[in-house]
Picture 1: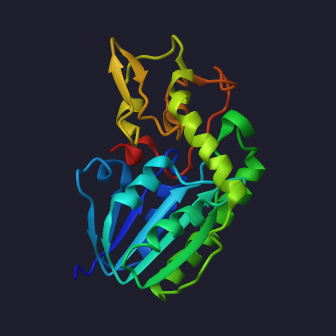
Picture 2: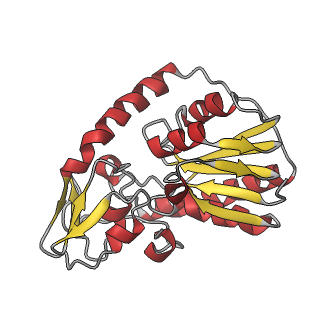
Amino acid sequence: MNKLTKIFYFSGTGNTLWSAKKIAEQIADAELINIGAEAEKDEIFIEAEAVILLFPAYAYGPPLIVRNFVKRAVIRTPYFAAFVTYGTSPGGALADICRIVKQKDIKAFYFGRIAAVENYIAIFGPPKPATAKKRLKMQSEATQKAARCIIERKTNNINTFRPCSAFISALFSIGVKIFYKWYKVNDTCDGCRDCEKLCPVSAITINNGRPDFSKKCEHCQGCLNLCPKEAIQFVRIKPGTPRYHHPEIDSDELSR
């Protein structure tokens, strides 16, 4: 068995990547792996002493790419842990992943939550500085706890019956299939290609110096929040609307 701890993450604005990096720093022989790139493989085979999954909650559920990645993956490990990062509420995101991995041949599980800054500014608006500072502190503490749980091989069980969360998540999954059509680009766009490079699912291509959005979009809004010209718009997010990304993560780190 490969002795590495493999840490798989999905991150749009850096919250989840930051926690994944901090956990990796605490664990010997840990490998960080971007789910966006890994999910494009025809076959996903994972073997390690421990497999760790970190992902954000999207409308009370996991991103579609994360759910499908876990379903498709053949996982050979004695220990699996999943952590959801969230702003307002994690909902039933962990329950969804738990239902999937419990069907695989894994003996020990741990499921945990990591509070982070709410980054869905299309609904909640940009975070206030005081709120962001408080949430970043909470994220740091929860991430340290997550690392300890992994090192100590903690196990737990969670309630997988979350019908309200499952319903909201299902509606969001339907919406994601059309949300990409609502992204607009204003004249400040200079065709720098940053959005194309950092999109975790390769949903953006640059044509004639302008980004085109495709139905592969997961609605992580990394492009919108990290555009250096703030040229990308979505619904209430117009020119001049403050954006958000984790202050210790930049677009280069999020690029695939």
